[in-house]
View 1: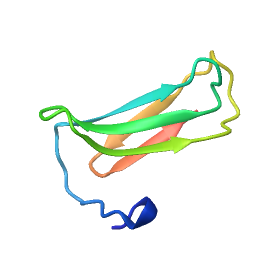
View 2: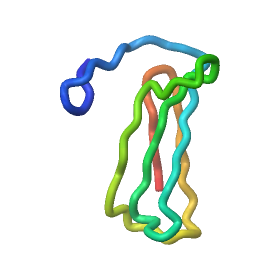
View 3: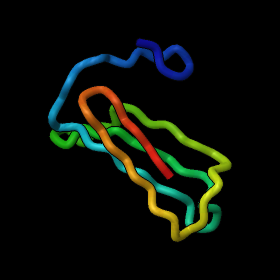
View 4: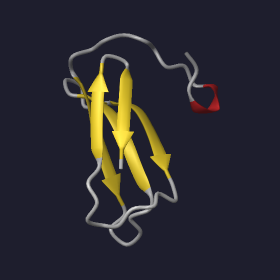
Length: 73
């Protein structure tokens, strides 16, 4: 499977992965997401979403199951 810019994303299930989301406090319409390996601390994959229509009090839900990350905001 190819990611952005042709980078190779390996398809495997690793129970040590988790997702972190972060946004800019001054401009909450830009968010970044990071898939991190909890054992090594390495960022396995990261991406950004821009121009999200939400206010600073809105809740962001992220679910990771096997090789799928679902984000709702």
